[in-house]
Amino acid sequence: MSSDYAAAVEAAPGHTPGRKWIARRLQHLDPDTDYVEIVRLSTLYHLNDMQLDWFYTVGTPAAGIKPAVNDAVIRNQNGKYVTQATKRRDDSVDHMLTWLEHGAQAMATHRSIEMVNKYHAHYAAEYPSGFDDVEDYIYILCLNATLVNTAQKRLGLSGFDAKQRHAMHRLWAGVADNFTLPDGRSVTDIAPFPESYEAMEQLVSDYIDRPWPVHQPSHISTAGGIERFASTWFPRPLRPLGRAVVTAFMPDGLLRAHDVPRPSPIAAWFARTVMRTMIVLSTKVLADPREDIQERRRRLADEGTTKRSVVDVAVHRRPKKQTASATTVGMCPGQAPG
Image 1 (tube, helix red, strand yellow):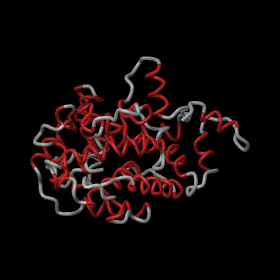
Image 2 (spheres, helix red, strand yellow; image 1 turned 90 degrees about the vertical axis):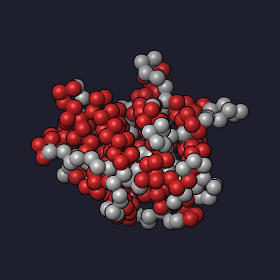
Image 3 (cartoon, one colour; image 1 turned 30 degrees about the horizontal axis):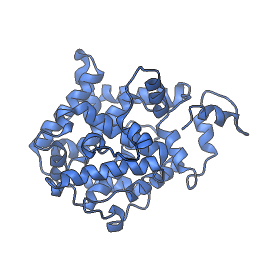
């Protein structure tokens, strides 16, 4: 996307320059035809690196609430989620950002999901039960689609409006069409994707509320992920708050399945206050950014102040005679499969 996008929108007929240009732009868009732009405006402009890390740290244990799925990712504590935690996070998040930026029909998204499908097929040989149930794929895709909005509503915020929810459902239904089981069968040819955003939310809630067994390997990996998040974003005296920023947003069924303690009421209150303040400042108070997170990352990489995303380079500049290795940049968002 062009870095001049915001300026072009404001220069268009019917638009005037201002601090909060995104909401005005959304008013003019149709969720049936402009859903990719609606999703991009609703997500990528107000995201920062901490929020992306939070999404990954909360979402991964939820995606792996089924023991067989989590076993396929942690691989007896030898998977990259454990041994190369930062790289695994970055690759997973960068795949997700590609889908949100381009939508399901774009070549970049096709290349991204092709990497993920190859990653699944590679590890399915050793962990077949982690990749063979189509229900797990659909659940994880719906989880990724609804996690942030669900968290906002738990904070007492309005979350996505009807237009944004419809657009989000359209995009993720298209993303689901690109996923295949390790044997090559299309996920949505085997089982239907939910018919609405609300149906996606209900599916996620019902799946998490099943009586999943407590799984000690999942406890170890989840506790490690929470500690990594806390140590990345909070100084040592505030790390209990950093842990609560994650655990305060985990449903009771998820905490039980991974044997993770519920935060104290005080810690949970502080954690929710931090997240609510961050969201309100970004969406309601501060001026809307002029570039989305993908544009910002590419600009900083061009300036030499940060490294380029391995996934972003692979999906946009992949040489014709060379494909990206499934074991290097194929990590799927949230958790395999999905």
